[in-house]
Length: 304
Image (cartoon, rainbow, N blue to C red; front, side, top):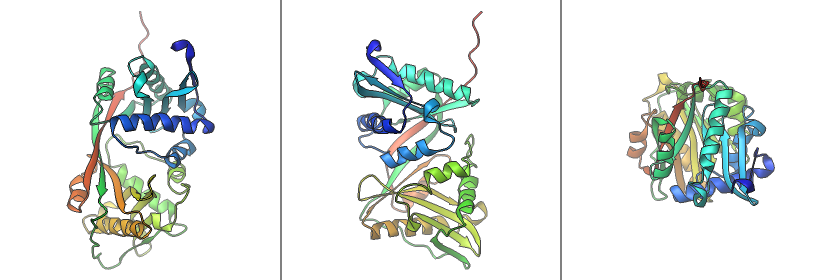
C-alpha cells in the first residue's frame, strides 16, 4: 500500500477531497457531518494558515483516503477513511501534525474525538493525549422557541453596524480568552472565518449595545442543510453578564433565521463556558458529545 500512497499539501483544488475524507469519518463516528465547504474554505483562508506547510491530503491509487491540518492555535485534525484504519496512515499523519506544531513553537497539540468514537479516543490516549475539556453540540428543535428577555434600560440588541467589527471581535475574544489554555485569535483570522464568510448578512451578526459600547455579540451562520442555522459565537462582556443579554441575543438570532426558513437552531459549547445548563433550560438538547484531547509537545530528546 505504501508504494501507492501519494501525500502532498492540500491546496485549494484539493479541498473537495479533504472535505470528502472528513465527511466519511464524521458519518462513521457521529452519524452526521459538521463541517461544510464554506467552513473549510474559511479555515484555509485564515492568514495564520499556510496550506503548503500546514495541510496534507493522502491518496491511494488516486482515491483520497487521509487528510490532516495543523492550525496556529494548536488545534489539529487528522482523519483516515474508515476502511483504511489500522494500516499506519493515521500514525504517520499524527506524527506530521505534532512535528508541525513543534516547528511553530507551540506547547501542545489538540485534537477532538466524539464520545462514540472509541477507536480515535484510544489512539490519541496511546500517543500521550489527555482529556482537556468536554464539548457538546446542541439543537433547538423546530417546535421550540427561545423566549425573548426584557433588557435593562439602555441595552439594545440590533444588527452590527459598519465600524463595529473590531469592537465585536474584542468582546468575543475577551470572553473566550477567559478559558484556560486558549490561544487568542487575531482580528484578521476572525475576519476570515466570520466577516468574509460567503452569505453573511447583517442578520448573522448581532450586537448588544449600551449607548455606543458593544457589550455582547452573537455570530450566526447558515448550516449545510437548508433548515439549519448555527450560532457560532455568543459572548457578553463580563460586567454585563447575568442580565438576560445572552438569551435575548439567541432569541433574536434564531428568530431571524426561522423567518428565513431555517427552523433548526444549533450551537456548540464546552465545559469551559459553564453554559450547558443555560442552553438546556432554554429548550435546547444535546445531540453530540465530544472531548478535546491535548498532548504536551516537548522537543524529542536525541538518543545517546
